[in-house]
Image (tube, rainbow, N blue to C red; front, side, top):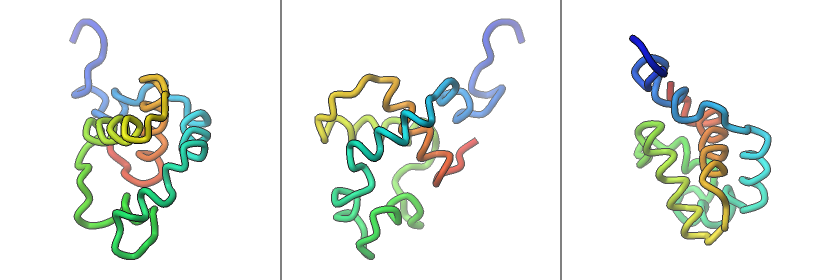
Length: 100
């Protein structure tokens, strides 16, 4: 194949999250309290982190994860840049989703 690598060549997550700043993503998760009471309200066990690991989770792939992070940031009116959503989604993928 000639030209830049595409998602099919390296995996969707590797393609979407390439160049993500993990440290910045972790800081933004903490700063915006992304794993706090908002997520807790969506779980049956009151554990905000179980939102990422439940059997019936809504996010099914890396593209969906990035879209969900963008929706959450809009709902929070977090005022972050587009690359910040990529950083956050990359952290969540590393820690919970493990999409390739």
